Image (cartoon, rainbow, N blue to C red; front, side, top):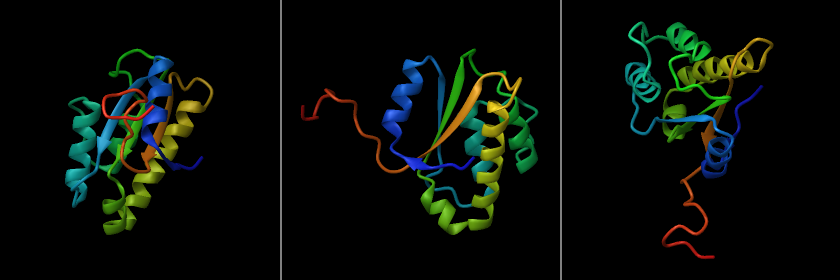
Length: 134
């Protein structure tokens, strides 16, 4: 399983239409691992036991029971390219953690499905929103 960058708006719309819980994790301005972990902690509203390290993030993503009941969960990672370029080793570790969490969510007995979308650019407004052309 690999993570593919793609436009965020269609993925969010499809997930929300299917009744999935959606969460955005904005990595804009993240400079180090401590800030990265804080962003995940805040976005997912992680439980108090979250240890702010790779193993704790993997554990948290493996048990999303504190999120609202839903047939699936979609995590949208935005503004990730700058951090990925500046911290390639940490970026690779994060990708591995996310890929493993997605694979667990798709396995037998994995509970609600988990998908992760890496935003490929600016979020497009929904069709028909103010300021858009038909």
